[in-house]
Length: 113
Length: 117
Image (cartoon, rainbow over all chains, first blue to last red; front, side, top):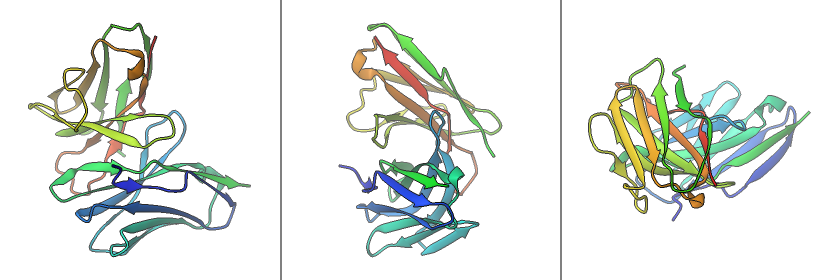
Protein backbone atom coordinates (compact mmCIF):
# COMPACT_ATOMS: atom_id res chain seq x y z
CA UNK A 1 0.00 0.00 0.00
CA UNK A 2 1.59 3.21 -1.19
CA UNK A 3 1.52 5.86 1.50
CA UNK A 4 2.62 8.68 -0.77
CA UNK A 5 0.97 9.15 -4.12
CA UNK A 6 1.61 11.34 -7.10
CA UNK A 7 -1.35 10.77 -9.35
CA UNK A 8 -0.07 12.68 -12.35
CA UNK A 9 2.71 10.78 -14.09
CA UNK A 10 3.48 13.70 -16.37
CA UNK A 11 2.92 17.42 -16.76
CA UNK A 12 3.68 19.73 -19.66
CA UNK A 13 3.99 23.48 -19.15
CA UNK A 14 5.03 26.40 -21.31
CA UNK A 15 8.19 28.25 -20.34
CA UNK A 16 7.45 31.20 -18.07
CA UNK A 17 4.19 29.77 -16.78
CA UNK A 18 3.53 28.13 -13.42
CA UNK A 19 4.10 24.42 -12.86
CA UNK A 20 2.06 22.80 -10.11
CA UNK A 21 2.97 19.31 -9.00
CA UNK A 22 0.73 17.52 -6.53
CA UNK A 23 1.28 14.87 -3.91
CA UNK A 24 -1.11 13.11 -1.53
CA UNK A 25 -0.34 11.01 1.51
CA UNK A 26 -2.35 8.69 3.68
CA UNK A 27 -0.36 8.43 6.90
CA UNK A 28 -1.44 11.13 9.35
CA UNK A 29 1.78 10.58 11.29
CA UNK A 30 3.87 12.08 8.51
CA UNK A 31 5.21 15.43 9.62
CA UNK A 32 8.10 16.17 7.32
CA UNK A 33 7.98 16.38 3.56
CA UNK A 34 10.55 16.77 0.84
CA UNK A 35 10.58 17.35 -2.88
CA UNK A 36 13.34 15.88 -5.01
CA UNK A 37 14.25 16.46 -8.62
CA UNK A 38 15.74 13.71 -10.74
CA UNK A 39 17.39 13.90 -14.13
CA UNK A 40 17.83 10.73 -16.21
CA UNK A 41 20.73 8.53 -15.11
CA UNK A 42 21.31 10.63 -12.00
CA UNK A 43 20.29 10.27 -8.38
CA UNK A 44 17.57 12.51 -6.98
CA UNK A 45 18.66 15.90 -5.67
CA UNK A 46 16.99 17.71 -2.84
CA UNK A 47 14.83 20.65 -3.82
CA UNK A 48 12.78 21.94 -0.91
CA UNK A 49 11.25 20.71 2.33
CA UNK A 50 8.44 21.57 4.69
CA UNK A 51 7.55 20.46 8.19
CA UNK A 52 4.01 20.07 9.43
CA UNK A 53 4.23 23.16 11.62
CA UNK A 54 4.17 25.24 8.45
CA UNK A 55 1.79 25.41 5.55
CA UNK A 56 4.14 27.11 3.12
CA UNK A 57 7.83 27.23 2.41
CA UNK A 58 9.40 29.29 -0.31
CA UNK A 59 12.85 29.12 -1.89
CA UNK A 60 13.35 31.27 -4.96
CA UNK A 61 11.14 30.02 -7.76
CA UNK A 62 10.02 27.02 -5.73
CA UNK A 63 7.22 27.05 -3.18
CA UNK A 64 5.80 24.07 -1.36
CA UNK A 65 2.33 24.21 0.14
CA UNK A 66 1.07 21.79 2.77
CA UNK A 67 -2.58 21.14 3.54
CA UNK A 68 -2.56 18.84 6.55
CA UNK A 69 -6.30 18.39 6.76
CA UNK A 70 -6.40 17.20 3.15
CA UNK A 71 -3.10 15.32 3.47
CA UNK A 72 -1.95 17.08 0.37
CA UNK A 73 1.10 18.99 -0.66
CA UNK A 74 2.02 20.76 -3.83
CA UNK A 75 5.12 22.19 -5.42
CA UNK A 76 4.83 25.40 -7.40
CA UNK A 77 7.53 26.48 -9.82
CA UNK A 78 7.24 30.05 -11.04
CA UNK A 79 8.34 30.91 -13.64
CA UNK A 80 9.02 27.52 -15.17
CA UNK A 81 12.21 27.12 -17.18
CA UNK A 82 13.25 24.43 -19.68
CA UNK A 83 15.98 23.36 -17.25
CA UNK A 84 13.28 22.43 -14.78
CA UNK A 85 12.30 19.52 -17.01
CA UNK A 86 12.88 16.45 -14.85
CA UNK A 87 11.05 13.92 -12.72
CA UNK A 88 9.89 15.29 -9.38
CA UNK A 89 9.38 13.05 -6.38
CA UNK A 90 7.69 13.95 -3.15
CA UNK A 91 8.70 12.12 0.01
CA UNK A 92 7.33 11.98 3.52
CA UNK A 93 8.43 10.80 6.93
CA UNK A 94 7.26 10.99 10.50
CA UNK A 95 5.87 9.24 13.52
CA UNK A 96 7.70 6.18 14.73
CA UNK A 97 9.43 5.90 11.39
CA UNK A 98 10.77 9.43 11.43
CA UNK A 99 14.03 8.23 9.96
CA UNK A 100 12.47 6.68 6.87
CA UNK A 101 11.18 8.47 3.85
CA UNK A 102 8.46 7.14 1.63
CA UNK A 103 8.39 8.31 -1.93
CA UNK A 104 5.70 8.97 -4.48
CA UNK A 105 6.00 7.52 -7.97
CA UNK A 106 7.13 10.81 -9.46
CA UNK A 107 5.80 13.32 -11.96
CA UNK A 108 7.69 13.98 -15.14
CA UNK A 109 7.67 17.70 -15.86
CA UNK A 110 8.32 18.95 -19.35
CA UNK A 111 8.79 22.69 -19.73
CA UNK A 112 8.47 23.69 -23.36
CA UNK A 113 10.49 26.64 -24.67
CA UNK B 1 26.40 20.35 -1.02
CA UNK B 2 27.13 16.94 0.38
CA UNK B 3 28.08 14.25 -2.13
CA UNK B 4 27.14 10.61 -2.15
CA UNK B 5 28.80 8.33 -4.65
CA UNK B 6 27.68 4.91 -5.78
CA UNK B 7 29.77 2.33 -7.53
CA UNK B 8 29.37 0.72 -9.97
CA UNK B 9 26.90 2.86 -11.87
CA UNK B 10 25.89 -0.13 -13.93
CA UNK B 11 26.68 -3.81 -13.84
CA UNK B 12 25.73 -6.85 -15.85
CA UNK B 13 26.12 -10.26 -14.27
CA UNK B 14 25.16 -13.85 -14.84
CA UNK B 15 22.35 -15.49 -12.97
CA UNK B 16 23.56 -17.10 -9.75
CA UNK B 17 26.44 -14.73 -9.13
CA UNK B 18 26.65 -12.09 -6.42
CA UNK B 19 27.04 -8.39 -7.00
CA UNK B 20 28.23 -5.75 -4.55
CA UNK B 21 27.20 -2.10 -4.79
CA UNK B 22 29.00 0.54 -2.75
CA UNK B 23 27.56 3.76 -1.38
CA UNK B 24 30.02 6.34 -0.08
CA UNK B 25 29.49 9.70 1.53
CA UNK B 26 32.42 11.69 0.21
CA UNK B 27 32.54 14.79 2.37
CA UNK B 28 30.45 13.99 5.40
CA UNK B 29 29.81 11.26 7.91
CA UNK B 30 26.60 9.33 7.63
CA UNK B 31 25.38 7.33 10.58
CA UNK B 32 22.38 6.23 8.55
CA UNK B 33 22.13 5.23 4.93
CA UNK B 34 19.12 3.99 3.04
CA UNK B 35 18.84 1.60 0.13
CA UNK B 36 16.07 1.89 -2.44
CA UNK B 37 15.02 -0.02 -5.47
CA UNK B 38 13.23 1.54 -8.38
CA UNK B 39 11.26 -0.30 -11.01
CA UNK B 40 10.51 1.46 -14.29
CA UNK B 41 7.94 4.22 -13.89
CA UNK B 42 7.50 3.46 -10.23
CA UNK B 43 8.54 5.15 -7.04
CA UNK B 44 11.67 4.57 -5.04
CA UNK B 45 10.88 1.65 -2.78
CA UNK B 46 12.73 1.68 0.51
CA UNK B 47 14.48 -1.65 0.96
CA UNK B 48 16.42 -1.20 4.17
CA UNK B 49 17.93 1.24 6.60
CA UNK B 50 21.64 0.80 7.15
CA UNK B 51 23.04 1.90 10.49
CA UNK B 52 26.75 2.21 11.07
CA UNK B 53 28.02 -0.52 13.34
CA UNK B 54 24.77 -2.42 13.64
CA UNK B 55 22.51 -4.67 11.63
CA UNK B 56 20.42 -3.21 8.88
CA UNK B 57 16.67 -2.87 9.31
CA UNK B 58 14.79 -4.35 6.37
CA UNK B 59 11.41 -3.34 5.10
CA UNK B 60 8.65 -5.88 4.99
CA UNK B 61 8.96 -8.21 2.05
CA UNK B 62 12.68 -7.62 1.49
CA UNK B 63 14.77 -10.75 1.93
CA UNK B 64 17.70 -9.93 4.19
CA UNK B 65 19.61 -13.04 3.08
CA UNK B 66 19.16 -11.99 -0.51
CA UNK B 67 20.16 -8.37 -0.08
CA UNK B 68 23.05 -8.22 2.35
CA UNK B 69 23.80 -4.78 3.74
CA UNK B 70 26.95 -3.81 5.57
CA UNK B 71 27.61 -0.37 7.03
CA UNK B 72 31.13 -0.82 8.27
CA UNK B 73 32.12 2.82 8.56
CA UNK B 74 30.59 6.28 8.75
CA UNK B 75 31.22 6.81 5.06
CA UNK B 76 30.52 3.45 3.45
CA UNK B 77 27.56 1.13 3.12
CA UNK B 78 27.45 -1.83 0.77
CA UNK B 79 24.55 -3.76 -0.72
CA UNK B 80 25.29 -7.26 -1.95
CA UNK B 81 22.74 -8.97 -4.14
CA UNK B 82 23.41 -12.64 -3.56
CA UNK B 83 22.68 -15.39 -6.08
CA UNK B 84 21.23 -12.82 -8.44
CA UNK B 85 18.34 -13.71 -10.71
CA UNK B 86 16.86 -11.82 -13.66
CA UNK B 87 14.03 -10.53 -11.46
CA UNK B 88 16.64 -8.73 -9.36
CA UNK B 89 17.43 -6.53 -12.35
CA UNK B 90 16.60 -3.03 -11.26
CA UNK B 91 17.90 0.41 -10.42
CA UNK B 92 19.30 0.58 -6.90
CA UNK B 93 19.86 3.92 -5.20
CA UNK B 94 21.33 4.75 -1.83
CA UNK B 95 20.87 7.86 0.25
CA UNK B 96 22.57 9.18 3.34
CA UNK B 97 21.78 11.58 6.09
CA UNK B 98 24.60 13.65 7.50
CA UNK B 99 25.33 12.90 11.14
CA UNK B 100 24.16 15.69 13.43
CA UNK B 101 22.16 17.44 10.72
CA UNK B 102 18.57 18.09 11.72
CA UNK B 103 17.07 19.15 8.43
CA UNK B 104 16.08 15.65 7.46
CA UNK B 105 17.57 16.20 4.04
CA UNK B 106 18.82 13.09 2.32
CA UNK B 107 21.66 13.05 -0.17
CA UNK B 108 21.37 10.51 -2.94
CA UNK B 109 23.87 8.54 -4.91
CA UNK B 110 23.72 8.40 -8.68
CA UNK B 111 22.16 4.96 -8.64
CA UNK B 112 23.35 1.58 -9.87
CA UNK B 113 21.62 -0.24 -12.67
CA UNK B 114 21.84 -3.99 -12.28
CA UNK B 115 21.08 -6.33 -15.16
CA UNK B 116 21.07 -10.04 -14.45
CA UNK B 117 21.27 -12.24 -17.51
